[in-house]
Length: 147
Image 1 (spheres, one colour):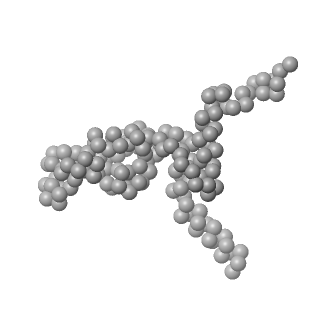
Image 2: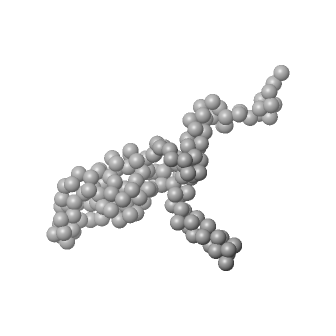
Image 3: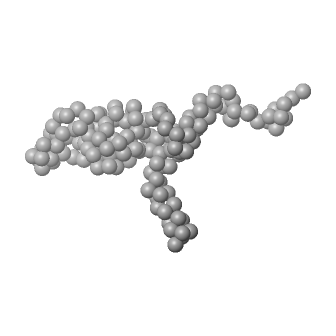
């Protein structure tokens, strides 16, 4: 006798079958964080698309005079070098920041998060980015109810 899932042609844990357990666990972690439970989650690397979108900055004489340094390796910038510029406007040697972004998706200085290829983590990242807007909508709702 077949079970309910077999009759409908579905697997109970998702398209990947039992191997989908890892994704389901990460999804539960994200939902816990979104609901205020303090929990650590593994941060994925930045997406290749986000890295490709980062512009290059040619080091000029002004940069050298202003003692611009790569925050990762702390070497001073030299004329004719190129630094990668993150969306937060921090500048790094290309090889330094690429090594960093292979381990995590955030700026080493300000922790600005770049997009990732992990759909579960992306949901959490976008949720965190929307925090100020969510609070404003909540305040507006409370004001409209009690004024």
